[in-house]
Image 1 (tube, helix red, strand yellow):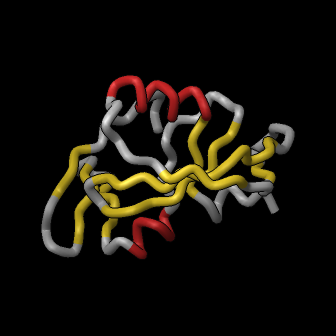
Image 2 (cartoon, rainbow, N blue to C red; image 1 turned 45 degrees about the horizontal axis):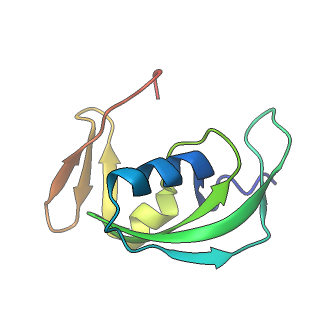
Length: 107
């Protein structure tokens, strides 16, 4: 089991870049010891977790020392009452708010 399908993840460099661009963002850093692996790669140790408020709500991301963008777990989207419309490239909340999604590298 890779655990990648069960937790939202982000690379440490992405969190640091986000904080440089958004210095007033309040982030709760919590130590962690999970391992996560993506298809065909060795497991990466989760350095800590970051609780980040965004337009969907509060999401806990596991920080990895990998070049990983902010990856939102579908179960977190479900919990927040949101879903991805892959035809329109929108995240849609249960209150009908919509947020555009930009695809990169075919993902």
